[in-house]
Image (cartoon, rainbow, N blue to C red; front, side, top):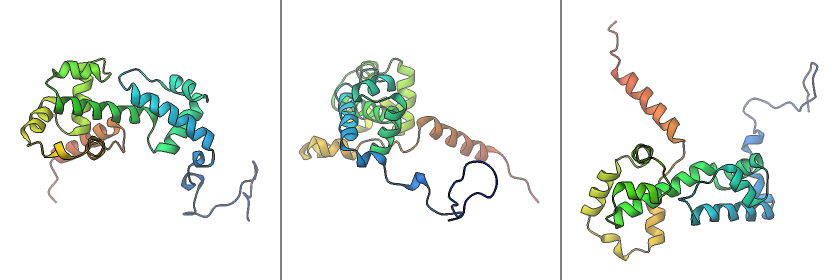
Length: 186
């Protein structure tokens, strides 16, 4: 194995395109005790998704440092803790909008949002329509899902947050900016 030719710590040479440490399997799969601790924090978030769950609080629940918790949670579940919590809140809000007649403001506060504007903007960014439009569409549909177990309905309608909401907004803004600029004629 070749090493770096010049000063500095010797590191193994890795050819371009070779697998890196980022391609390695999640480290949490090797430690069942850590996975149990992460599941404990995840269960607490699920049970009380309307509460504030900063990384410090989650790390205390799982008994590890904040940085280790954030890194390990993402390795184990594929999402950072904040995005996981956001997914749960949007999922719960969608269920309340679909199944109850609560005002949108009440739904926002029951699902842990401090601001109606932030709730509406985030809901629209994730789901693709405003909370009021979502409710109107969901309640207009026949209740064909009444015979499907609730856990299957929840899983099928779970928002897919593979990227951060702010990144999604940036990409959409860049795409609309490119589309609005006239192209030059040769």
